Image 1 (cartoon, rainbow, N blue to C red):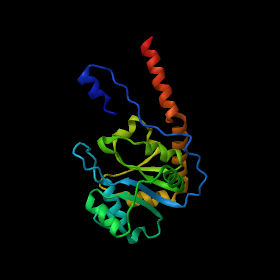
Image 2 (image 1 turned 120 degrees about the horizontal axis):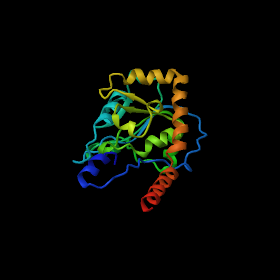
Image 3 (image 1 turned 60 degrees about the vertical axis):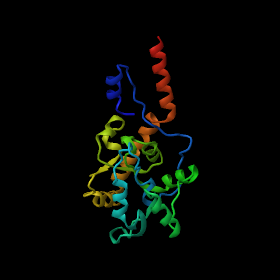
Image 4 (image 1 turned 135 degrees about the vertical axis):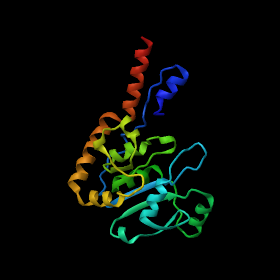
Length: 221
């Protein structure tokens, strides 16, 4: 977890922070990027200790006319944007209704998940429960998708500011940012290229294991 200072102070034991990473063997994208923007995952974890915002729900409601967490049809302002949206409703009633309506979405298997990332220009990445920066951030960058995420100071623990794009938490600039990114390919490609080179250099699981072993060897000396 990123909050290592708190754990160090409460236990008087030094903690080290290892972020998630990605499996470099899985990502060698050759697919054409024919999806403008995408998201896949649970809309919001409602467990008591999850401490996760409803921003995924609000983004979905921004894109679609919805019913009980189920996207029914794209809104007029996004009619010309190709969106891949695979969200899991927050509660059982929503999941049951999505099944009845034939709009049931499921977790993607590994192969389909990688294919989707590789085919998508912009991927929505929001913070996971407890403010975690999930492997999907790294996987999106490795697939050549631009990471679009809500504003947070937590990213600076891992990434420089020029490898992702943020939007305001109230979504007041969300539509403008999406449209700008989709029409300004030069800007989009510049960010994607920097992110791609960064994650392959610093954020593979091989990097994480090597860093851990180095720390262990240093500690044992």
